[in-house]
Length: 340
Ligand SMILES: [Zn+2]
Image 1 (cartoon, helix red, strand yellow):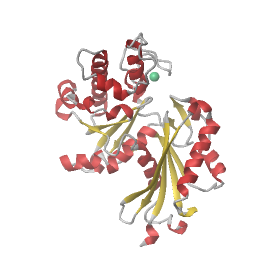
Image 2: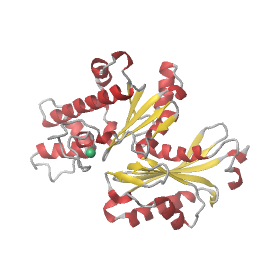
Image 3: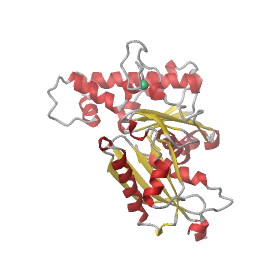
Image 4: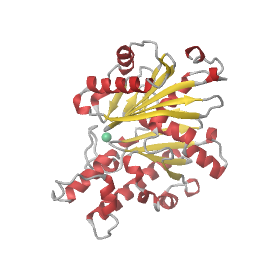
């Protein structure tokens, strides 16, 4: 049954790093990670350079294929912004790098393979796709008996920006132009005098909950004395263990905002669960008391959701990006067979 093996590749382009994974899909649906790589995005260097970095990653991972890129079923790419499902163009995001750029055709041209299937999707959509199908969704099914096909799951990325994705009973909800679940630009602070956001509004969730916002809060209150030290989210949470510290106040405030944010979403979508991803989501202390808070404050306490830490690692998005390719192929037609 070797003929039904498929190789798929996923690329997750984040604000600070690009991750790539090469996966072997086996008959029966199991998958095996063949190779995984990451490289800094260096988005300040511009589109052409980032494009080259993606090309190099694809070529690098393709060295592991039995017949170079002839045996690759396709590449799925997650971008940090709204991606129009029809045109495959990124329409907006916290980096303007990819906005309006024909990434798909540029990659096919640079790779010299104009028929290679490439599918582009919002990174938070990739994240929830992977978590529902292979991570938190399985856990929830085990805990509650509610199958993956019945679940409503929301993925939230707390990274350079704040992104969201929703799986409604097995299907991604994208909205009309891919702008559905742009929850980072939903209201958390005041729309008149809350924190300003790059999108032009005030009070956006991203201005309070992104890793970038968290670092800025810390820098502001440290009054410059830490300017020589490279601070990270980890050190903020480490220092926050001391209840008399400024870090404790910053983290407490962050947790309060995160809880309010999830309550807003619960009152709109009534999901089975949230899964948190992105750099900040690694902090175990975020989860303490969070579900209890949702039960207390959600409009319908009986349906308050579970809150999971990412099950596939904080960069599950790269797996979701690869799974996009799998969904491109009709299993009954075995379109990938000819490639092997
Ligand atoms: Zn905004």
